[in-house]
Every structure is written in structure tokens, then in C-alpha cells.
Image 1 (cartoon, rainbow, N blue to C red):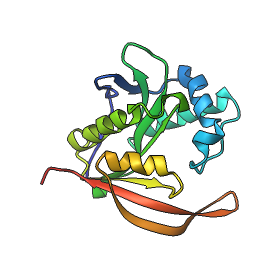
Image 2: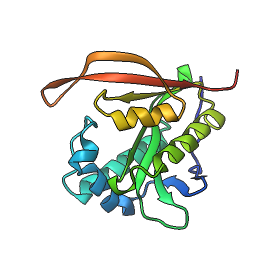
Image 3: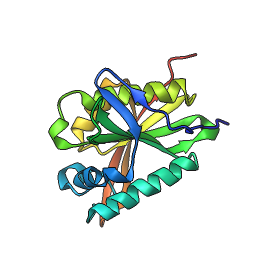
Image 4: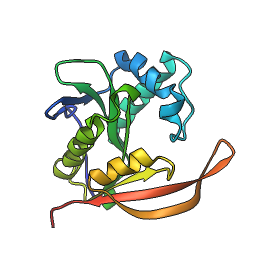
Length: 184
């Protein structure tokens, strides 16, 4: 069984980005994303109603981080502090050396390969530092941009579950993508 250590919080840097811990001061940027119907269209969670709800989400995620049940990085441009997105692992299964990756990016930054860069960095961290053997991404079949992105990041479609999820009175299909560590 794996044990995770996120203390101190692991800051990850790429060519353009810094992945850092989410803070209460990110609540306005988090609210902007979590209240955007277009960004939340495929996320089976209620939209944030105000910045305080976004702050509560950040607090919950940091509490789960302290329990080693998830890690979620805030995405910023290096040298800037404004939160533009998030990427992280949740539904972690230390017994099986597996975790699910999730991500969200402010709409104005779509199409600029920012999330691809952030996912590559998170995947590298997951395999090299967390010692994960496999990762999965669960994506709506209607979220074409997301599954094309995850395919660019080396994930392979493993399953198409029919009516897998029931949210707001609707059954939803889900694709499951996975990626195995390159280390044998």
C-alpha cells in the first residue's frame, strides 16, 4: 500500500506554470470557475453561488489534502499569483496504486496548451513522487475537448459506461481513460 506525503506541499514548476497549493485568497477566481455554467456543464457538482462557497470548497480540499485523500494544485503563470485553473488527484486508491485525475481551466486560457502542460506535470509527479502505477480520467462523452486533451497526455480509453451517473434527474454516460506508468 502506498503512503502519500504532501507536507510540505509540493510546488511543481513547468516552463510557463507554477502548480501551488490552493489558498483562501483564491476564492474569487475559484468562484468565477465554479459558477460558470459552461465550465461546470460536465461537472456533477452544484455551481458555487458566491465566493464564500468557493472558499469552503478550497478549505474542504485542503482538509482532504491534510488527510492525504487528495491533492489539488492551483495553476498560475510563473511569476504571477492569479489562479487560472486547477489540476489534481482524487479518489486515490493507495492499496491499488491508483488515482483519478481532474482538472479545470478558466475559459479565457483554453486552446493555449496550458492544461496539457499542467496535466503532464501532474502525471509526472504522480508517477515519480507518489509512486502511482495507474491513473484514470472519467469524462462525459459529450466533453470532446476534455477527452481529446487527455488522449494527448497519453491516456487511453478503457471503457464507456452507459447511464453510469445520475445527476439532476438525468442519467449520464461516462468514458474512463487510463494511463499506466512507463516504468516496468
